[in-house]
Image 1: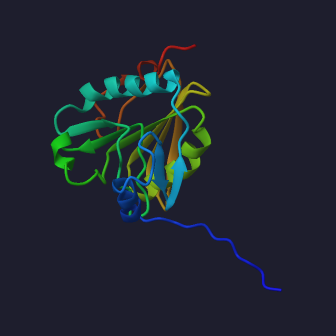
Image 2: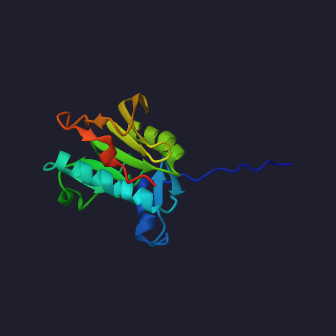
Image 3: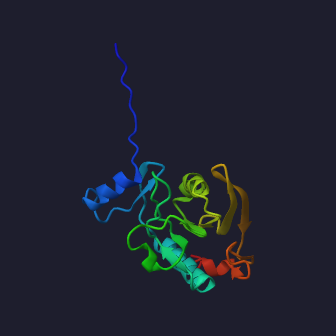
Length: 188
């Protein structure tokens, strides 16, 4: 008797974008392509959304001219990935990306509540392989900022955990000192 094999189907970023353009997915679906797999993301809580806004508001004056602080927009990370990070700080300005999604960033931030495992495992590896020099996870579960740096061999070699009384300086803006508490929403 023959044994059936069951495989998963991986997608390229080009195939994924074509499906989006053809209206294959419902417009309200929150999807991300990570390592060839399409993940359906859970709806945002107000706490998560406020965290995204807090990070955006804190980073905009730090980066200013020459960078675009992009909230929840597609990021072209290789041939088989197009995540929508909560915040991506990309070189240039918004007009530079009218014909294609950004593929380089100096900093990516994910706000994690229910997605903490996904952000630590899948997304960290994805961003490290893409050569993103710095990746932050605003951890709303443990109420801390996880700072990942030094990407090598598909992983970040450095991980630092910062708390409310600490400050953080982005690698690309070492002169800036951002109070960690300013990145978080108010506690529930």
